[in-house]
Amino acid sequence: MPLDWEQVVIDSRDPQALGRWWAAALDWVVTLDSHEEFEIRPSVAATPGMIFVPVEETKTTKNRVHPDFRPHNQQAEVDRLLLLGASRADLGQGEQPWVVLLDPEGNEFCILNAPSR
Image: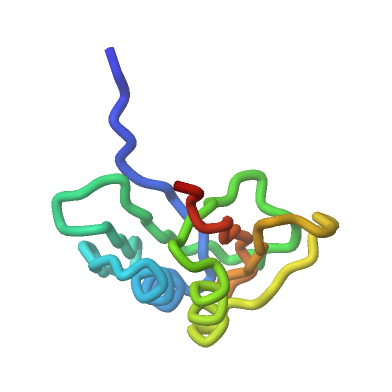
C-alpha cells in the first residue's frame, strides 16, 4: 500500500514566526494557527505541507534533513530569500552549483540551479 506524504514537521522556538516566514518564502497558505501547531500548505487541500511545533532548545548542529528547491532563476530567488531574512551558510560544501541558505532559525535549505530543459 503506498504512502501519501502529508507534511514535514519542523521544531521551532517560534512556530508562528518561522511558519509565516516559510509561507512567504514559498507563497503558501496558512492552514492552521494555534499555540501548539502552525501549518502551511501550497493550497488548503494540497500536500505535502509543513507544520511547525514549539520546542525550548535552540538549534545547534547541522540539520540531518533539509529541503532543496529548484527555481527558474537561482540568483533572483537567492536574492529574494535573503531580502526576506534568510542568510547564506558555509557548511564546508566548497564551490557547488547550489546555494546553501539558512531560514531565520538556522535551518539549512538549498537553492539549486535552474532546470536544464
